Length: 259
Image (cartoon, rainbow, N blue to C red; front, side, top):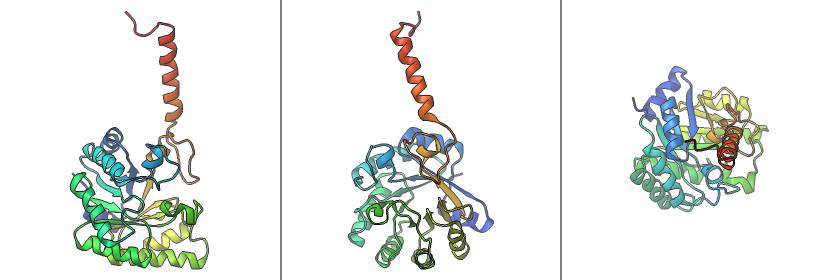
């Protein structure tokens, strides 16, 4: 049965953990969906994982749309949510509606994710929801603000923690259906999770969230560098490298193909 945002809300109330992973192409999306992942995020991390950029910032809307379409073709059951790329939604509410609407109209996605919980972004979320676009929020470490925040943990002192808590509350009140909590103290994430009626999805935010998300390239051991809070469940870099080396050796030794 296909998963929707109402199902995620039910799972929050039931204490049923939500499994979230990222995808950037058809093959990965199909595998994640068949494995039973609940929510697949077409994250702007694909800028680094698939396109080789150093940060998420260079990703364009046309690139995101291209990948979101490919992911959508591979998914039958999971809820698919897509990041809005940097500067495709921050300039105005009209720009945000146009960008989000483009993804919902031309790719098989059921919602979008935006970063930040400052007042202007909260109002943007409110308007997106009003026109019928489901929105996932994202607070704590927001990678699109890398040049301002870096990749360090956020919310470590009381003032900053309260700011993140208030942002999460404001996003819920604006109509967000879920919120990603990235790289914040576990105690803060648990407090936010308890105070919100919508699901929280943690990444580097402890076990007290309603669900967890990882960048799939990190989970599979494909990434060159791992974030401190990620866990690899396989080492595909090593497996793929060895397979290619074995193939190369057999070709050079004229052992492949066989008669």
